[in-house]
Image 1 (spheres, rainbow, N blue to C red):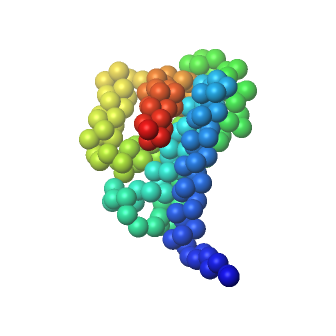
Image 2: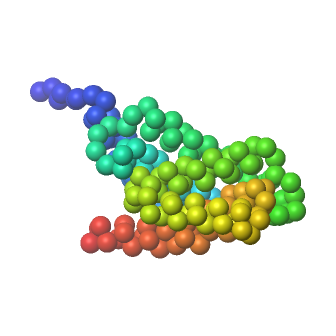
Length: 185
């Protein structure tokens, strides 16, 4: 008796999404059992899983239907690059003095890139309201508060006060766990 396996693109995609989701669950259960790693690693890994699933599951129109387009895969790579950059350069990020040490051009590029893809991922999942609000506050910081672009990127990307701040920490440490255990129940 032979088992026929359908290796179509759609089936491989669904398998990949399932495996990524299972890996995310295993990672968070591991963090519960053995304690979460350092903040950048824990929150960054959580964000990397979330961004991967968002760009795989939500189209540019905001609909969660159909298979990813080449643009979705490009955005996925662009979302992963800044997070992996922080992982690779972890000692540099931790050892630098925030708001004092100059950012390199790659720090600035990665910070701007992560900010833009987080806004795009947010737009895809919940619509325009939150990204527009975030852009208004960013414009306020630049225009009214006169925050320099370097300090803005430093705050948003190179510390655990911006993108990797308390909302992401709560999502990674508590929301994910409650959703996970709720789904088991």
